[in-house]
Amino acid sequence: MSGLEVNKILASIILAILVVTVIGHLGDIIIDVEHHEMEETAYKIDVPDTGEVKSGVAPKEEIIEPISLILASASLEKGEKLFKKCSACHNYEKDSANKVGPNLWNLINRPKANVDGFAYSKALAEHGGEWGYEELAEFLYKPKKYIKGTKMNFAGLKKVEDRANLVLFLREHSDSPVPLP
Figure 1 (spheres, helix red, strand yellow):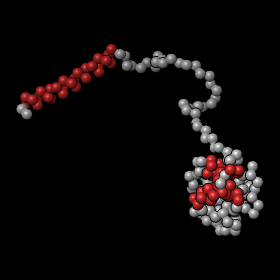
Figure 2: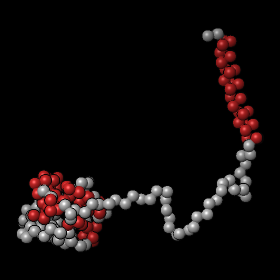
Figure 3: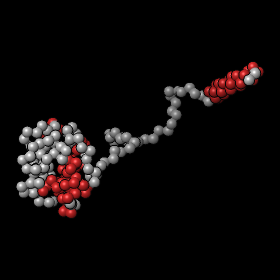
Figure 4: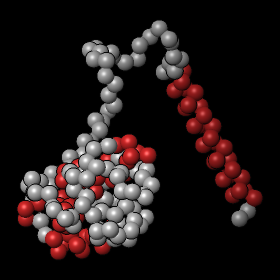
C-alpha cells in the first residue's frame, strides 16, 4: 500500500468523525435539550391513592393442592418407594434411633418438634401445632418455604400424588393409624 492510499484512509476516517460531530451539534441546536424544571414532559394520570404499594407484577400465589381427596386412593407401595429418599435422614420404625432427622414413627397428629433427644431447629420448635395430613403435605411440598429456618434440606415433592402416597405410608407406621379424612 502506498503512502497516498494510507492518507486517503486516514482522511476518510477524520472526515467521518467530523461529520458525526457536526450533525450531533446541529441536532442539539435544532432540538432544545436543556431540561427546564418548571416544564412537564409527560402527561400526568390521576390514580387514586389506596395506601397499598403495588409493583408492576403481582406476586404469584402458589396453590398447593390438598391431598385429602386422594388419600383413599393413594398407594402404600409407591409411598414406600418415595420414603427411600427420606430414609437417608429419617427412620420410621418404632423405637428406632434418630438419624440426621427425627424418627417418624406415629407422625400423623403428633405435636411438632417433640421427639426426645433430637435437636430441632428453632423455627420448627416455635412453629407449634401438630402434623395433620394437609399440614404435613404442605411441608413436604417445600419445607424451606413452609417453615422458614428449618434445618431440613429437602427440595420437596411437587406432585400431589407423591405427597399423598408418602403421607399414607407414614400414617401406616403407627400403633393405631389415624383415620383418613
